[in-house]
Length: 69
Image (cartoon, rainbow, N blue to C red; front, top):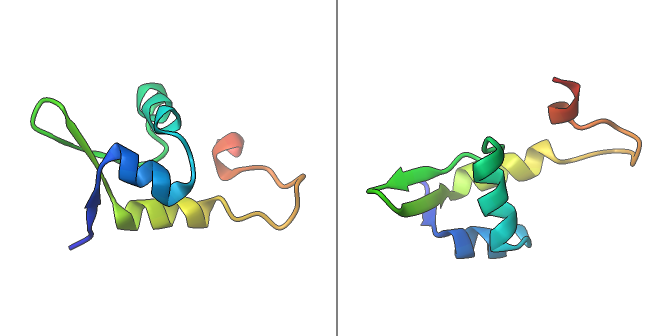
């Protein structure tokens, strides 16, 4: 079972702001999240690791996988 992190904890883990994650959820969630009850949002640590791995580039001109779709 993967550890569940709050938005604040996930933002710290990724080195981004809470607002970044809130905008991501609003815009279509490139980073998967879990909704618990009517308000609680949690992120699985494994999903954060997967997101980080997807961001690896070997050149600044290399297109993102998300941009190609």
